[in-house]
Image (tube, rainbow, N blue to C red):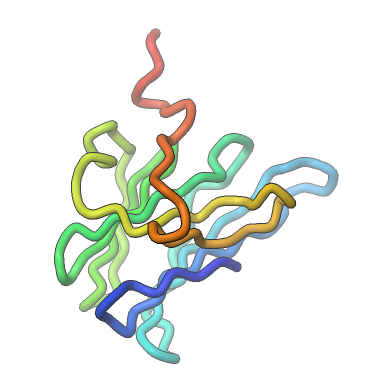
Amino acid sequence: MATAKIPGTTVTLSIERVAARPFLAEYKRTLVVARGQDILTKFKMDSDTGGTVLVNLYRISDKSVSLVDRLSTYFVNMELGEVTRRNSTIEDEEQGQFLGAFDVTEAKDWRYFPSSERAKRPIPHRMSDSKS
């Protein structure tokens, strides 16, 4: 599990990755929203069936953040602990302040990189960017 602390709040966002199949790099993902020690919600994210590892985190307002990967955008109301999902668009990466990213290290460890530690990276192979 990797965890991001939202600056100026007591809210944390964690993404749990659990292997979906032995011997394959496929993962089930769950977003956990907490305030202090209280879990507000657990939300099943799209599975990572390969290539969905990078998840960028953005602050939209004092009360909301978004997480963007190659398939979906997850909007989190930090006040209510509610999560909504929609198909990602390139515009989703252009709104809000970049806070950091959930990603793997060179050693393949899952963790959160705050923006002070690593600059924003584009989401590779965006589904909405592909040409038919």
